[in-house]
Length: 249
Ligand SMILES: [Mg+2]
Image (tube, rainbow, N blue to C red):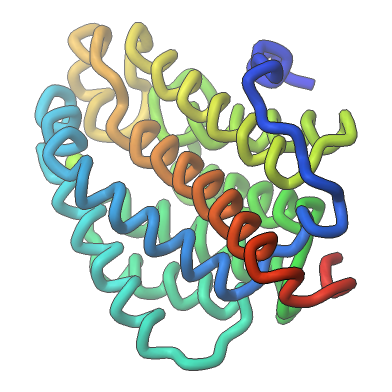
């Protein structure tokens, strides 16, 4: 267990409604998540660009928004796809439409997560944990960043640790995504006092201190959207009765 995972407050998390109903993530939920990420990126585009203007080249908001607009268009054009195929399509689209560091980093994260999901039609939190771990490994392979370097890893790594911790404690998909969202936001805020050691911000040396990292911010936003998508999916399932049973893994 990491210090970041141990610091996550669990009391604010919603209780799970029962494991069977809670552990189903399917292609519809993944599509919903991608749509929610795109909406949040649109809403936060100028904020992300302001953050990047302070310690980078002021393109993060525009890049992420352009990339996710392309992802939604590409994914929307596919009628039938597994969750893994959707994420791999998102990754390839991101790499081909987004320049700078964000394209290869996020593109690889999505590709690796999609690979980890294989070709299952739906999955539960344990397989989601595998996908998150594969995403982090992909990002670290491409970016060679560690926790504390003031990058997206500072949000992704604690989010993954919190997600795993919550599952190990017997939590549900809902409480695990809640914990991941909180840990990502905490990791994002913790980048403010750090001096950047990777990426363009590292050229500023000590002048990078005092600014929140744009990449950690967009990563935290994706975890907020993940919790939102999981909760919306649960509400829909409860409202309409169980869509299916026993297909979670
Ligand atoms: Mg930039």
